[in-house]
Amino acid sequence: MAEVSSHPKKWLIAYNSISASLWSIVFFNTVFLGVSLGQPHLFDYTNKVTTAIQTLAVIEIYNSATGLVKSPLFTTATQVFSRLLIVWGICQLLPQSPANTHWVYITLSLSWSITEIIRYSYYASNLRSPDAVPHWLTWLRYTTFYVLYPTGVFSETYMVYLSLDEASAVFGPWFKWLLVFILFTYIPGFYMLYTYMIKQRKKVLGKKPSTKKTQ
Image (tube, rainbow, N blue to C red):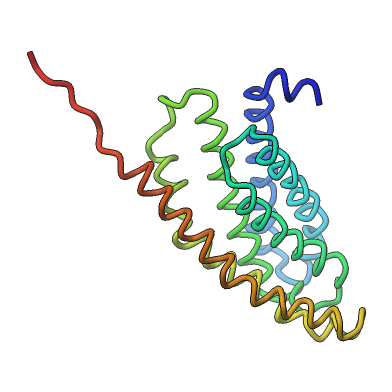
């Protein structure tokens, strides 16, 4: 993509701004449809939209692999593929899974959408003007993960767990055991991502404001 290579900053600002807006749709759908309709209607009305929006995140793997962003490739790929497992491996391939109409689908959508609205908004703002990023946005970016990452990972793993029997019934035992294996990979994956964010928080929020010496 010629435009990406010649104008990487504009491309990244556009990507992050659009992504923040799209995840806002997921958030408002979850809140308003969840309150007004509840399950299973929430899943029926939102799963395809959420799947499409989450699938766009494969662009982040490209951005990391080509050096457009500094995010570690392995960490980025791990996070993206774990989510693709949910939206494609469960929501689309196993539409009758009890996980899809369970309350955990709501906690999943909220954890993902709030995280991504904050993250993409921060990236877009930082790319436009690194010195003008609101402190509250920086604080949210490097603090809310303490709660949202565990709730997100819990929701993902619980959805996989609830889908094991359906996976075996639809595709055979091999798919069930594949999901069981993937469940165990969440342990090191979560540890890697969580500790990485803790280090990033210390790096960003741990900076002491510089003071000028008076003459």
